Amino acid sequence: MKKTFPVTVYTSCSNGDAVNAFPGVAVLKNGHILAVFQSADTKNSAFCTVRLARSPDRGRTWQDAGAPFALWQRQHPYSLHAGYLTELENGEIIFTLMLCDRRNGMDKLFFNPETGGALPICIGVSRSRDAGQSWSVPDVIATGRFDEFPVPVMAPVVKCADGELFLPFEVAKNYADATPWVHYAGGLISPDQGRHWTECVITAHDCTHRKMFWDNRIISLGGSRLFGMFWTFDNVVNGDAPVHSARSFDNGRTWSRPVATNITGQATFPARYGQRLLAVTVDRFHSHAIKLYSAEFPGVDWHWEDDIYVHSLAENAAGELNDALVQMQYWSFGLPTIAPLGEREFIVLWYAGRPEATSIYSINITME
Image (cartoon, rainbow, N blue to C red):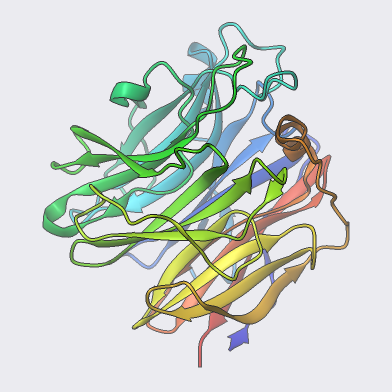
């Protein structure tokens, strides 16, 4: 494997966007790369938005492409916590957004430290027909049985067979709810390129409530086959379990039971590499690194390839679930994402810095 030197996508600034985190990335048909990330005064603040950066030269240099929904936010009571991009076959780009309704929570933490509940969160969808130069007003998407719960979107829309789309999400609990968190990883299915989301499905759920399958990152393996990876939290040991994976053979309508991999990490993003798989993960508490793994199908036994980035600051686990949710506010690196640039070349993005000032970085890797 070969890798370039890391490149700064967007650096922390002193003019209200000191903290930049949670990157997403899309490689467009015109050759440009679009990155999206949360940008705020502090992570997950009431004033956070999403920014875009654009690379015209395969990630060698990046240009600030602005905060496309900043004006819309001035007129609507939402903070924007994450965004993800998918270019459709017709050239449109679909932009999925994690919207947080702040009408009753401008002064509240994103997670309630007493209950572990989240502020009201919904999914917004915007579209671009000009390669990301302009965007439609976000539409709030219904999630059926989960409409009364916070519903974070944690990954881009997946293009499936027969033109269907799959939009992954997960289900949090309401802010004041002191009962145990009943967690679901789920998804919405669209038959018409995202104009209507007609089916709501369960991707992963533990009926014993021991394990929670967070940050479901899903890719297409071709045809109707989908593959997902989950940051898995174990409520019995009060800590992270091994990363789990699951598969679907019907465009995401039904899923295999999640199985443990041999990856120690948190949010993990897979990518297809010929007849193999790659995955990037953050190992926060052991090697303090963004790590790259490879595997044969079905993606259970993984081989470590390299450390993409090693962080200089140690971060400690918080223990109890509610403490861990609040502690995430102060983590200073992580949430890697990966996208193919070609048959053997990929781009990886992550955030890193100090808790009060983080930037977005990218690196190109070539598999040999």
